[in-house]
Length: 313
Length: 314
Image 1 (cartoon, rainbow over the protein chains, first blue to last red):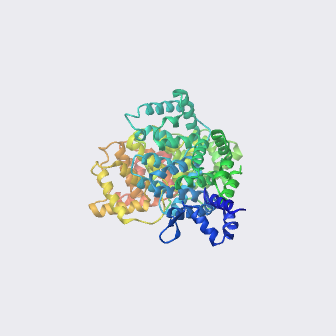
Image 2 (image 1 turned 90 degrees about the horizontal axis):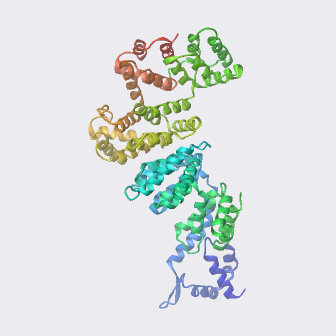
Image 3 (image 1 turned 180 degrees about the vertical axis):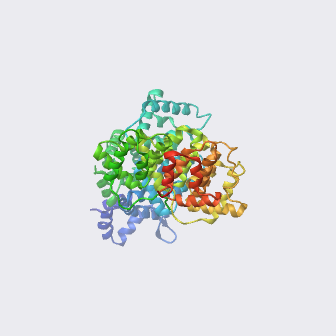
């Protein structure tokens, strides 16, 4: 390979999710000091030329980036080998520590797991953190989101097939009225909306979703402006669409640290559940196959690992 | 400690046969029903039910419902159910009775361990095809709804760790909300529905140290609305549930027209758990034994059954 090609390969190896370990081993491993200096000089993003002292310094951002990218595969492995209950408990704890920008993960865990899985997460949380999930969520979150989030993590929804259709219809009306009156009473203060979303069974909510569309012509989540409520409805009623959207946002080269992490989170947590359906929905929405997109954007062991998980089901 | 006296070995088949005999002919031989069922623990009762079904192709509970009547029938019916199923039934009845029933829901949520509350929620799914919190939420509003739903959906941490600073600050919050009836109800609800029981005990102790009296004293029971009543019940149940049950029994006995429902609920639920402690608290408080106080107020087969569960030797 000519040097320019090698340079290109190494640049690629470092850009994306994870790192291409193989290229780094074969190419970098054989470069002599001049070639490595050439690499530094040709990568101004990552190395800053110190003209006064005649050397190329690592950019701080580059150092941090490398740390995250090398460790991405390890994090995926650790998350994958963990018991799903511990996994969810840790995801919740991390989200609470990160703050409001991460609370979507709370909604995701609370609404896309089965009743028994959520229960298991609550048990694991006791064991890991010496507090209950609802305790920590309630004491960490003080704002308007508290009511909804505490209610969501405490739910133990009925999972049978019985649904009362007229109740679903009347609750769709309640939601419709609440949304129309949002300028008088914000949605996160509406106890009835929270009651319906946080206590009804998923099948019931899917019936509500259907009736809402018939009444108002739009999808319930589209009409909700509050982000948490939107996510709640999406996770409960159309989880594969929700996950596809999260994946799509993550599968970009230049995306922030937290959004990047959601790629690992979604694939690892859904590999055993509904990754096949998510794949289909992703293709539906974005007209490109999920594995293909992962191939484009991820690197090395991390990429291979994800592709393996996606191929299940 | 339990008050129920049950043999260590028994034959479910023989019991099923004896019960069958008791049903035959005119009327029912209530004495036999009491003598057998009043002396079997929950596992034994389930085995008898299974045996009866196998031999006679009939549900023992349904048969009992048709053979017996009144308070006696209600007590035996409740007694025959497994703990979680019974509490699910009690919760459902309580929800339907509105104001009069909220304290039962609070009792179930606060006295039982987190795993036991979970079992009740599962039993509720099975019986009513809805979640317990769903039904409570549909039938209540505002702070009361928040409190009750919060209590039944809690899954409290069960460890011994205590945060003393937190106990102090949360004791103050409770003081504001409970005694002075102002202040942040949402915070009081948060504390009572999410903190571990050990942490809450520390908080209640802090309260007593800071304000000189126990948090349960002088709680304004009668003058308040449903929310405050439920709040006070929750605090009393979390603080010392044996004392709470003693009061329930004392009130049930004292009032004009004894409250058999309350007596049945407490005795049937606790006979296999800590009825002995409750009896001790009762005696200490009233200087008369619970059985003697009850014997004056209730009668007939119902009385015989309740006293049997309380450990009366034949």
